[in-house]
Length: 383
Image 1: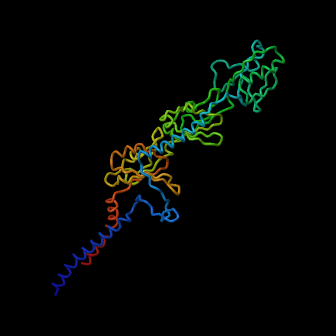
Image 2: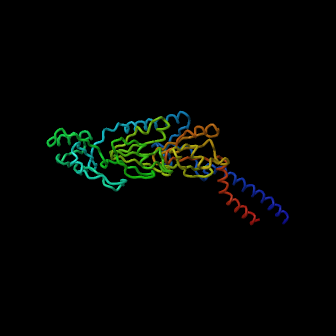
Image 3: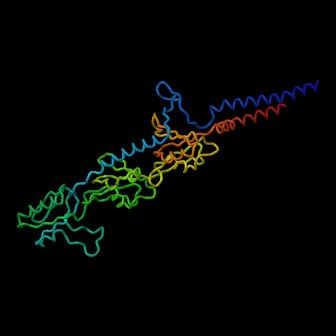
């Protein structure tokens, strides 16, 4: 009888093990649909236009040559419009409060001493400039001419005012007026330039190139594709790299008094690269401010050849809105990387590379294996 019971127990153990294995495989296969980790897929459609799980709804757009041309054309038109608004020709310089004027009345040396003596030796920045300073009210006091309001006048118009005033004292006075120091109008350059600060505006129109040059040029971390110009409370984006690529001369952009030119840092406009890549990272734009999909993947160490599904590469744009844009690239063919090299990313984009089916199965199995081992140990203990 003992022998029969042992036989029954011996046959029962293999059967139990097989049953346990079968159950484990069934659970593993069914769990592949709910594998841990993120997956990119089309959300179920809800009646109110949102996903059933209240996630933002989106429309998948295939990355192809037509899309790249469309996006590039849109951005070029926008930049051209902004550049045209800022390319208005600057008028003649108009005198303002703080400007220092040098006035010469020919054949009347007695008036020369009124504007002060020029500094001896090599002039220094701290030395006062010889001349007549326009006061805060915009007025100028000159001997025998009295007080004249010159603010808002051009050099020629102010000179004519002085001639008219002196004509009451002198016969046919010959007057020459020039601006010795431009102090009334400035532009402000800050951000990623070598010497940020105030730059005076003179009688030569200040272009975008000149403003950057006066500020010492761009620093190593500057993003020259996302500069902004604030004028009259309106912010205009400036993409220096795109201007050069499309044959637009940055010197056509003229700065005006009171403008604020800001040059941001490239690190402020990174792109998140996630999923099945070798080094998930924050990819930053290159020196010219551009960052393409292939650039971002390169900074992340490329896709993981063993775990990535090259057919499921996504770019998520506008993730903070209710309707983000999602672009899809099938990168199974190496030729598709030509498209990736032309597709320009925008700040805060998310690049996500999905995993293949084997990876999802492996992750489920890794969660179940501790439970399987525990069950097997318990079965052996009972035996």
